[in-house]
Length: 462
Image (cartoon, rainbow, N blue to C red; front, side, top):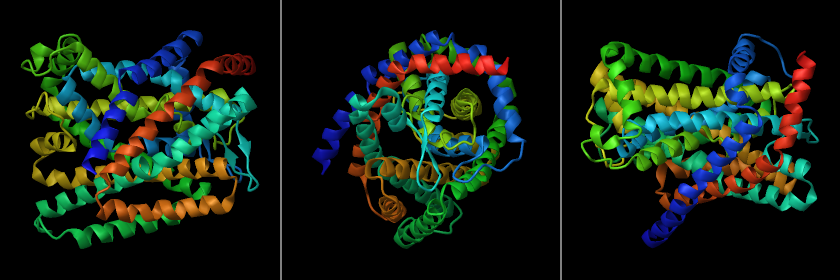
């Protein structure tokens, strides 16, 4: 088993290595140039369109979500444990300068996500129940034609093989670990014998996941539009508290971020030797966090009750901004402003971020970080559950197949809570990386259609 895990880890390093990141950034730069860096020029308009709709209550038609529910569902999948643990890992391996490169990848990622969402809404279709279906497999099929349809099926199959590990088991494992740690900290649980507790947690998650996902797209939207704003606001307030309590350190922290982006050795005691490593860790964290280039978020956006693809595309810009520029940056500031010891040169995880909170608020705050971790992980399970259902529907074109998938997906929550699935997680990461290839090809080839949509939108808006 260890040999298989190590072999797959080597494959992962190649798939998620420098060539893959270069392709994702390259396509992002190409799309940015072709659109005239729309994500920067139209950023105020994008924020006005998206934030303005948050406070506009309306019902979507049957089989669809409101634009706000759609972006919340997409954010449910993208705002995950990586926003807490992944940023900590990027800083410990790449130094504070990794945060700067994370921002750079997010700027290009905003345009990539805009194009993904615009194409997903433009090329979407409806199933027999009247539900709106879209995403990379649909804009490949309907935009590139039948000669490229094999890419659409490859994307969907890779997606099905990804969701059980990336979207479910790893997230459930994070939830059980967070709850166990909080219970142990308050002497409510011994260090040994957590099996029954983990089984109970897994069963509860499985039941909740089944009830929500089997309830259809409307129920998913109703849950995510409440859960995502709550968990995001909760984490933002918790993080801003740390920043304000150490406000005197903020200027020096930002100076360190910018300076160490190109010279990390001086700021990490020599543990981080080159700016290439800092760049690699920061860029990869940004890509993994906001999923720009992966295409999955566009599946949720395609369910939006809107007739203007570009307007929903603005929600894609907002999604990357909220996930990476806001949430990931706050995590970085918690770590750097709190003054906790950072193990430079060694991979750190959520424990480093948690230390930033507990060193500021006290040990009792670990319960709040546990709540944040659980919310982030559970929302990811829901978002990826929707994606998996759409992948299954595309491949098998059968409502029964979708229900079987959702039932299995819920049951995996129990396995994720009780069984070591290291190989499954590792293989899922591999297929997750393979999903990028069909999507980037489609984005590159369909760029003229995005430009056409932008021109039509500007004409209609006067």
